[in-house]
Amino acid sequence: MPLASKYTIAGPLVIGTFLSRPNRFTAMVKAGDEILGLHLMDPGRLTELLVQGREVIFRKVDARSRKTRGEVIGIRSDDTWVLVNSSLHSKIARWLIEAGLIEELRGWSIKKAEYKYGRSRIDFLLEKGGDRGLLEVKGCTLVKNGIALFPDAPTQRGRRHVIELIEARREGFETSILFLVTRVGAKAFSPNWDMDPNFSSSLVQACEAGVNVMAYCLNFDGKALEPKKRLKVILK
Image (tube, rainbow, N blue to C red; front, side, top):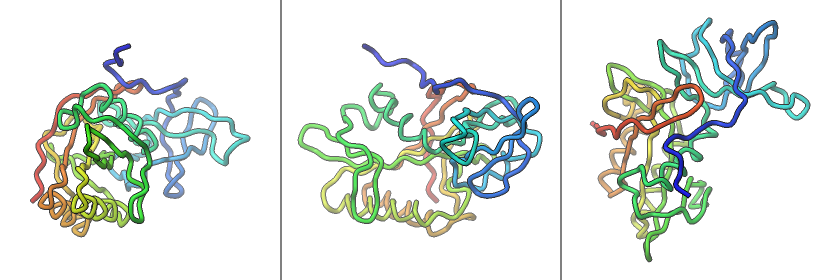
């Protein structure tokens, strides 16, 4: 059966109003007469998105099973929604790969998710004929002057993933990094040199070593995502 042209997020989804972020992984949101603590599954600073009064779309969970009452899915910015849930990135990437929507990965299939390599777990082990590939997926929410920038906070973990991919490339793997940009205003992608020069320089080194660096922009309507365009990657 052919895959759907959109990736639909399981619901039901609820819209509320952002109040505050008391810690890195919690967002306080008002929904109707309730004020809820929601799990915020995005390690970035999200400074330009988490503005008091902004609309938030979230999914409720059984409160007895966790400290928070649900999880944030997206935040409204101007007239568009921005996905801010890193737990969905690998699921979206899997759908894109299996649907043949990532041009550079057509013909590759997913052999294993969360593949252990070195000190990291890389999102996917891929295969194509007798070749093996590794793919790491990152979500990008920051856009300035039409340029999608990653990261929006220093990331030692992200840099470690890049370094592991460089080593894997030397060992014969085909290696790739896919940046999923969920803001439709992006026209190109670049590492965020001002925020994290160490990650940025490592990404340049990865590209020079033969790691494929890709960025794709997706439109998010608050319920489903669909690929919009492949973005030009500007490394320096």
